[in-house]
Image (cartoon, rainbow over all chains, first blue to last red):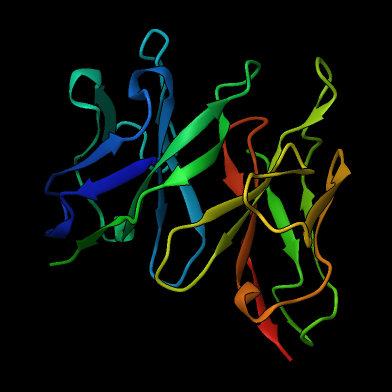
Length: 123
Length: 112
């Protein structure tokens, strides 16, 4: 069965860095696009980034562009999110999710989600 | 970015009755090349990640009960639960994947 397990969350001071990981199992990881989506406490869902399997194309939401970097290691079935210059408003649960390619856009619907990793940015 | 607006923000329905949640996009999510609407619905229960219910606006994900259905096209969409069950209490989100992914603000569904 498909499983996505995030790790690397924690408490960090503003301006510092943190790297999240998401280990995938139960499917051919290298053939799927993978997303990060976040949810601030008590708030809605916000898309963060996607990395596709073709050409390693990457796209980011405006709120994190230039500060966060998405990457993947297909040999380890692992997705990463490097978060630099963290701000208080980056505090959220970060979910990794599997994307289903549409063939016509860079976005997708998300059929499997991990349980999430909580990142708290506070001084 | 395309703005997704759901209505109502919260909804209380009697067990066994119909629940209807609306989602409106600020621009059409109907792709001209394939005539598909790039719209999905998710259910989120407390302490859990979202679960996909519907994609392409009306295609039910495998394993999702058939009391859940999606409809609409262009900019106006609806998620309908035909006969509310206690386990359907949750937050519901619409999402467009026509361009940079955006979600609606969520609709909280409760039992009356």
